Amino acid sequence: MDQDVNTPSRVSSAPDGPVICPISAHPGFAAAVRHSTTGPLALLDRDPSFYRCIGDIPSYALGVLALYLHSTDRLYHRGLRNVAKDLFSPGRATAILSRMQTIGLIVPIDAFEKGRQRRYSPAPAMIEAFRACYLIELQSLAMIDARAGALVEVFDDPAIFDGIIAFLASSHLASPTLDQELIDPMGGVGRRSMGLMLSYALAEAAFKAGLPRAAGPIEITVSSLARRLGISRPHCRRVLILLQDAGLVSVDQKANAVTLMPAFAEALDVYFVGMFNALLAAVHHVSAERLRGSR
Image (cartoon, rainbow, N blue to C red):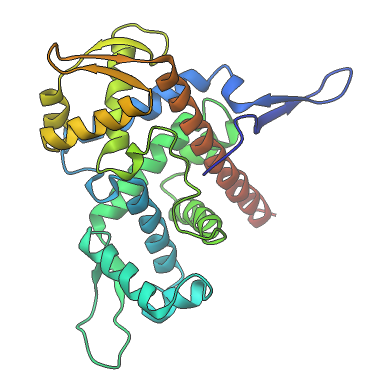
């Protein structure tokens, strides 16, 4: 979600009053960014189909919505419309459910019958991908906020995952669109299939080269990127061109050389500031609910 990079991650006491610490200034922020870029890639290396159903920001937003609808027993046409009547017309609700099914987010649980509301369930692969995704992000956030670490320890409790999804879904539904509040400072690659994962792979190459930030020359080829991410080389080139047009990278395709500009590292930081702050709000909400429930 689009967040101010100065959103505080913690407040400490000082003689002249509270000192607000931006999340990006936290000592653990750099390590958290590294974990959040390398973690998903490691899962993808083990299973090339992993994250395929949520390989772009719009699909991710629809996945959050599908999981939320399922948890509230409203994953069907009328249920979707009832969530936000001002947001979903009958035609849009039909299109959203169709899109969810086409990209593998949901599966029907009963046969189609005229005049009857067909119900759906989240696809098992989608649930697995989301759970793995949020566990990685919680582990990263735990390097910044102890409350996230406490939730990591009890993540096997389904209520933790459901609570995070419910909070994020309510935030998405409060906006005019499903996904435009999700921050994508990476030249729009988040809307391209596996675009963010490609950006992660570039950042990982910089980290492996010993660069302190995701900026500088790296050794990587279009062929290796495409093969690793399970995309075509033309698609891979198009995503790199998007990054180059945004001034984030410089690509010399003849020499198979890519240079990550300082703006790339800055954009990556902005992206994770937005992600971590959104998740941090969910963590605080779920933690407070757990505390109230224990009284």
